[in-house]
Structure formats: structure tokens, C-alpha cells
Amino acid sequence: MKVIILIIPIVVLICIQLIPIGYGTDIDNYRVMLSSKTLIKEGRYIPSRNFGYPLNEIIMSPLYALGKNIATNTATLILFILSIFIFYKLAMSFKADYPEVITIIYAFHPILLKNATIPLDYIWSLAFVMSSLITAGERKPVISGMALAIAVGFRAGNILYLPILLIVQKNTRERIITIISTLVLSLVLYSLPISYFINKPLNLAMGGERSITLMFRNALGLFGNIGWLMVIVLAILWLIKQLRSRPADRRVMRGNIALTALIAINIAIFVTFPFETEYLITLLPAFLILISQRAPRPLLALLAIAVISYNFVWFDITSTGIKAREGVIISQIEGRKHLERLRSELPEAKIPEPAIIVCALGEALYFDNPDMKVVSLAQEGIYDKTLIKARGRDVFFVYIGDENYISRMVERGYHIYYLPYAREMTLITYGYDIYEYGDELNI
View 1 (tube, rainbow, N blue to C red):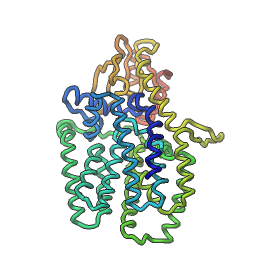
View 2: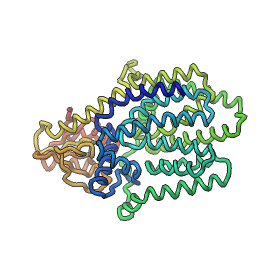
View 3: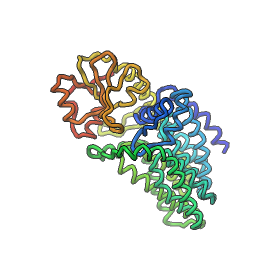
View 4: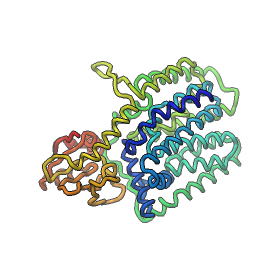
């Protein structure tokens, strides 16, 4: 435990530099904040995305009023620090052999550090999912169910972890109590989204084909090239030792089955929606605990070094050789600064008018930005239908657009410009290259 306490100041020093730089690079952060701002300013609930993320949206509302991004980002960092201790307790509860080593990996994992200072729910959800597992093992079914329900309140998909709690628990009575407490509190927490969607149908369309390349690229983001090599070696060693011996403790065996199921559920979610590395976050604690039970300590220490270094530098293995790249935290700092620069400079971009800029920014462009005005919101939840205008100019901004829409705008005399990321998003979503209709805008 002393080692864990000693690493907390280092975690804070790494993360604190991200707190004042916007709300993060993921546009969903701004969607959450728009929902939270509407709730606190107008008393009106609008879900940030399909299904709603009610606890995330509600909690960020007073934090926005208190101190905007400073308050929201600081709150998430505080919860992340608490989650480090929660993970350590989870590792002890599930009989990890080297809890201190894997807690260090957890505390400095770049995907967790990257999300430790943003409004989105990833860290909040993870903390309560881990808490529900701990209390399930401690035979506290009401608390376990309520903890999972709170995680569901942050993200509806967390309800998929309910069967895992039932595996950990020992008798039917505990399982029934957990199911009831989870479902009842989840329904209460989702009363706002349910009342909203009664009159507004969900939009579940997933335009375009999913990219296998995108899936592998985002999966790579969990450990990096070198980290994944270490992970594969550890997994093979774990499997060999697992086949040679059986846990004497039935509780350990039941816990291992639960952790394996958690990993399987996460992988299934990620394969279905391979757009964010963050969808793999919840499997990380389960994976670290399972690996630590059979892996030699020196190899775990090497994995820790690889993961920590991935924050600052990683090595891209290409056909032309090995190239050093900026690590996750370094690129996150630069990415946030770049997004803030786009928010201020795009309205003043020196381009011929009339023009349309395809930017894939949406709410990140107009949220709390006095230089931008929302002209039309064709349908809430369909972000590429939102039309944004630079004040005092004949320049419009769209998230992305289908080929028919862009070609019509060209026919009407609009100059088409696009940001590099928007070109990639358009290709993935609509299957055409916007390069054929306009020019890249570099800012």
C-alpha cells in the first residue's frame, strides 16, 4: 500500500497539466457538456447521445456551473485517484499475486491517464464496476447491485456486467437481491432519458462499413506495439500454467471465471463498435489480475515499464523500419491545444466565400464559442445534420456530409474545405473521398 500512496503525486503531476486545456479531444466530451449546460441553464434534459448517459450528464451540470472545464476535469481526476485504491482492493480480493505491480500498471496506463481529466464517463463507470465486483465478493448484494446500477447510470452498456456479479456470488438469495437492486435503481436513474425518448425515437443508424484496419489500430492503442508483445508472452505463460494446475480455492476459480467473462464481454462490445480504444477500458483490471496470478514478477515489471513509457514515446513498426512516435499523454496535450486553436481560428479562416468546411467537430466547435452560431439542428442526435455558421461571414461548418449533400453544395457555388480527420471520418461513414470535391484546410 505504501508504494501505491507514493505514486499518487506522480499521477497528479502527469495529469494536472491536462486539466486547463479544454474538455479533451473526443467530441463526445462536448456533447456531454452541451447536455449538462442545457440542464443547468434551462432546466431541460437533452441526452448527449443515444440511450442517454444520465448520471454523467447530471453530475457535470453543477460542475460546469462551478468552474467549467477546470471543475469537470478535476472531479474526474479525483475519482481516478480513488479508482487506483479501488483497483488495489479488487486485486487483493481476487487473489492477484503481485497487487502492487499491477496497480502501478493500472495507475500509469496511458488510456486511463488520457481519460482521467475529461468529462466523459469512462473512469466513473470503471470505478463503480470494480466496486460492484468487490462488494459482490464480500457478500453485500444490495451494495453490489447499487454500485453496478450507478455504473449503468453513467453508461447503459454496463448492465451487461450483471451476470458477472452473479458468477461471483455464492447463493441464489444474493443473486436475486443483486438483480432487483440493480434493475430498480437503474430504472430510477434512467427516468429522464426514458421520458425523453418516449416521444423521440432512437437513431441507431451506423453509416458505412466498419473498418477492420480501424479496429486493429484502436486495439493497438491499449498497450502499444512493444506492450502487446509483452502481453502476448504473459498470456501464453498464464495459459500454460493454468492448464498445468487448478486453483485450490473455489472462490478464486469462480472469480477467474467472472474476470474471463468480463474480458469476453468487452471484446464483443469492441468488435461490434471498433471506433474507440476506450471501449476496452473495463477489461484492463480483469486482464491484469488474471495475468498476475501466473506470470513471473520480472516479466510483469517489464510490462509496467513498457506501459509507462507508452505515455511518452512509442515505436511504430512499419515497412520502412521502426520510428519513434509521441506517446499518448504527449499527443493528448498537443491534441487538446490543437483543438482549442481550431475553435478560435476556424471562424477567421482566410478562404473564399461562400464556403462549407467539413470539420468533424460538431459541438466541440460551437460549445461556449461566441464566434460560432448554430443555424439549424435538423434532428437531435444526428450530428452531421447540424449546420454551424461563423458570425459575420458566409462560411458554414458541418460535422460530415454524405456525397449527395456535398455535391449539391458544390452545384450551389459553395467552396468545399475539409480537415484531415474529417476526410477519414467521411470515408469510414459514407464510403467516398471528399478530396474529390474540395481542398484540405490546414490550421
